[in-house]
Image 1 (cartoon, rainbow, N blue to C red):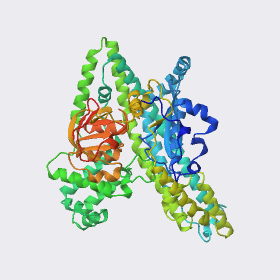
Image 2: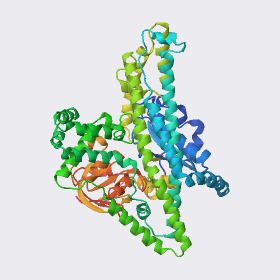
Image 3: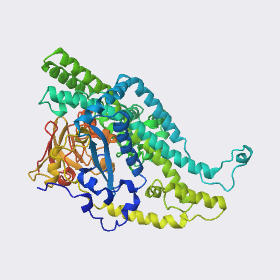
Image 4: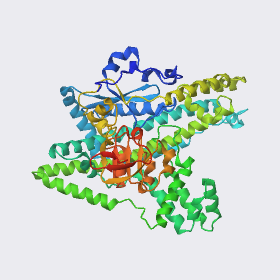
Length: 603
């Protein structure tokens, strides 16, 4: 077994991808001037959020995200053992390196700052969280209000008579800068609560590990389960629409072959208006839901791809017809939660210990809704708006001859867009032809070839020499990077004995045929009783959890979104297996043990 992964400087550029570095900012590239530092770090590929090649403009959210994470850890709340997560791009893929605090004296010096700053948020959590919801909805409104209009032949007369002195060219460039400002503000808001939410959970987690040395990670997580969060609302709205369709006799409409045909059949029905009223209510905002992680402009949004929610509605209609319940097993989950809390509480030696346990568990439950809810408001709803606005801008530049399709704009770095807009603006102002109509089409074509070549390359799971023991809690619980998983990577994969190991993410046992899918595009292939095997699952896949027998993923830890959602839906799950989609084939029979984290290939 190897003792290290290749260094970033040993990785070659894939054939056909020469010049890929030009597609990303200089600051996120591995470089000779930082080589000593970069070779001394352990880097892992972020398969949870960014499993594939990042288009140049899409990298905006990736960079804003990790800057926001770091500043809140380091500059705002001064979290004692952790700074931020350093990030690099290599051959178009995201690699991360957690930056911890190793000096015990420095950790001790950071504690008073953390207690004062984080303590204020914990003491006023509900009040500040209500305030956060107002802020995020106001920001969403400001993003929706942005518009990119073609530059007119002449400015309207009121521009002259109002004395504004500002015209369409100024507004075009100003609105793009506003869009970036909104995106950066969005990611500042994202980590205002998230890091503290994790910190509270980790404090509770650490107490449990110390008080109950043999407690499984899964038992700790299950004691925080059974809490309603907004991330489940899209699925609830789909169930509501399915139930209403059956009640109104509209269920046959969902056998139609396309969303347009479904809507035509519904509108032609005497009860169609009632269903359409509920559809419009559900759709805004709950169908601003991405079929992927929300970090890619190519992710399909329910609102813009109605075949996704309509397929789920049709599936739920089938369950209703068969007399099956659509409800999540909330009572079973909460009963198991309460049983565990009672039993572990009884194991504690003193009332003081029980009070500490109850306080830490109570805080973990208080903060938990944000840990999931932010995902809908930021990565799904807000990103859907921002990508749509960028697509509007791209469509405008198509009309000006800069691009051949609106999505070409995502092939530009964020700081190149103002150059293209100023080219258009200045030529329009003077009355001449912009260079962009000649410059960008061949350049976009070149960049698309590079991106496609990068997609054909398989990145290593990690770079550099791993630490002897991986203890950084975010890395373990969210990304699923542990000493054991890293050793498995170094040993080059599966054990060859018909099985895989991962995190026991959600309890239960299941056997059934595998269905291997790589993205949301494969969801329609899933048959009842199959075991879903995927690189990762997105929250928007929740409607299939009532159809499948279990879930197995390549990436993610005990607190990944896949793990949390599976627990809430009572679905056995093993996450972070690393090699499931490469080892398992569709149709093979599997046994999934969500209690031990073992996946057995029975064929």
